[in-house]
Image 1 (tube, rainbow, N blue to C red):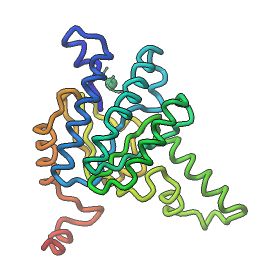
Image 2 (tube, protein in one colour; image 1 turned 30 degrees about the vertical axis):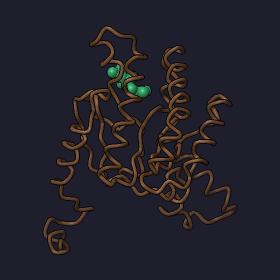
Image 3 (cartoon, rainbow, N blue to C red; image 1 turned 180 degrees about the vertical axis):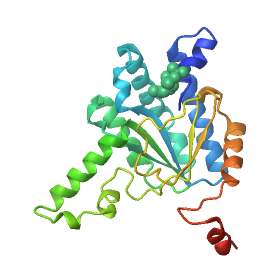
Length: 229
Ligand code: IPE
Ligand code: MG
């Protein structure tokens, strides 16, 4: 979700105002996804690299996270949202960690849409943790026992399907350490639209683009044509 700072700058507002609008926009996009019967959405809210931002911006982001976790909880439960945080939450304040645990617990039965929020998330560190976790549970295992499933089953996204579509807003054309393993066959959509401007209409445009993509998963166009109904 990129472009909050620029959105604020265009309006001569502090960067934090952009993050506040971005958070509201995330809520709108989640609603639009639920209306489209999308079952999973993963929002990249805070990367492991974002700690390097000015302390007051980091603290404002944490504040927004806490505010929305608490403020949106009732609405999430009502709308059938199941919330899951992806990332190392041990570095967050105890208040934020408690709010995360509470929100995940309260929304656990949500069956309309799963909203994954990547917070203090980094794809590389996720992969390192996955390998460590596998090694710890397989002491003395042969290297040949280690395979793709070993990684897959130890990722934070265990049980979450790989993304079909990845949307990067704000004109950046990179993954920035997001779902590196999981996005191997994901369709990548880049748009100049700044995240606070990314509304239901922008989402529709991204999905229309996605629908005309041919997903071959390494096969030929002809092979894919055969299996189409
Ligand atoms: C949001 O956008 C990213 C977050 C960490 C929440 P930015 O803060 O990167 O916005 P720009 O790139 O400065 O416009
Ligand atoms: Mg940015």
